[in-house]
Length: 166
Image 1 (cartoon, rainbow, N blue to C red):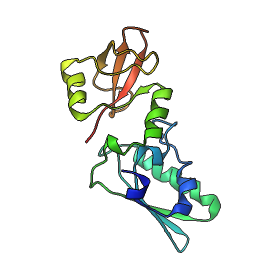
Image 2 (image 1 turned 180 degrees about the vertical axis):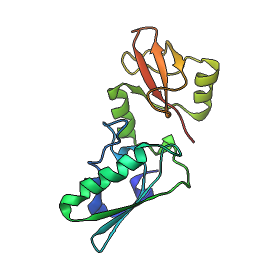
Image 3 (image 1 turned 60 degrees about the vertical axis):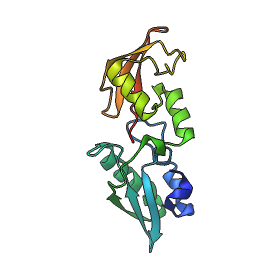
C-alpha cells in the first residue's frame, strides 16, 4: 500500500514521519506501513494502526509514542488497532526497505522464496553487509518474531532477515 491508498490527513504526515518503530528505530511508522488512517477532528487525532504480527508488543509503544509526538501541539490521540486486512511486508515502503538494509536487516523476499529459505535452506537471502547470497539460516526466530537469524559465510557476520508476510 502507498500513502495514496490509505486515509491520512496530509498535515499529520510530518508528525507521523517522526514516530519510529521501537524494534527497528531507523523505520518510521509510515515506512513500516502500519498506519491505516490518521484523521484529526476537534483537536483529537484518530489513528488506525495495523500490527505487523497479531499481539506484537510494539503496538502499545507506538500508540504511546504517537501520543507523545502530538502532545506538544496540544492534540490528543486515540489509537484503534485494525486487524483486517492483515499487515503485509508489501506495505513497507521502498525507502523503508533501503533503510532496513543499511541498518543491517535483510529485506523480505517473496512468499514462495521465503518458504524455500526458511524451510528448505535455499541460499537466497542477501547479506546486508557484503551482499553475498552465501548465507544460511541459524534460527527461524531472530531478535523479534518477525525476523529470522542468518549468518553470512562470506563475511561471517550474523544478521536478521525480515520474514515475508502476506
